[in-house]
Image 1 (cartoon, helix red, strand yellow):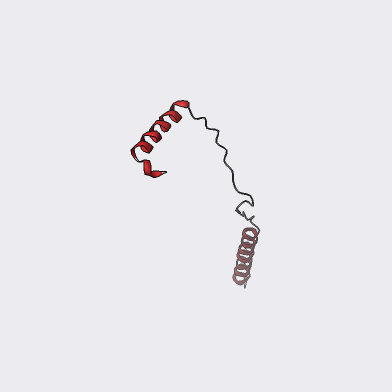
Image 2 (cartoon, helix red, strand yellow; image 1 turned 90 degrees about the vertical axis):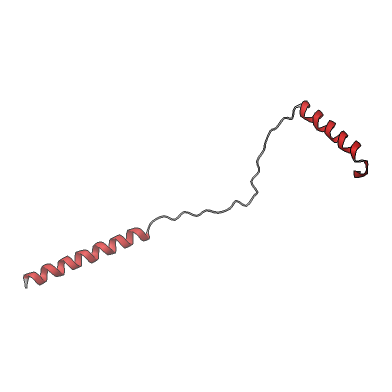
Amino acid sequence: MRNIDRMTIKITVMALLMFCCLVITACAPTVKVETPNEPITINLNIKLDADIRVKLEEEAKKDIAANPGIF
């Protein structure tokens, strides 16, 4: 009868430990990832050099002169 009592105690302790583990994992915090309500804005402060602008204007003038029917 002693073996049955020890076995019952072991099973009860194991069941109690399993229940405690389940309770602990059930109480774990959750993390939610949501999109913002407002759009994300990225401000880029870019300064164009005059060289680049002049080169683009020259290329545009050449293209217009080569194809006058574009505009």
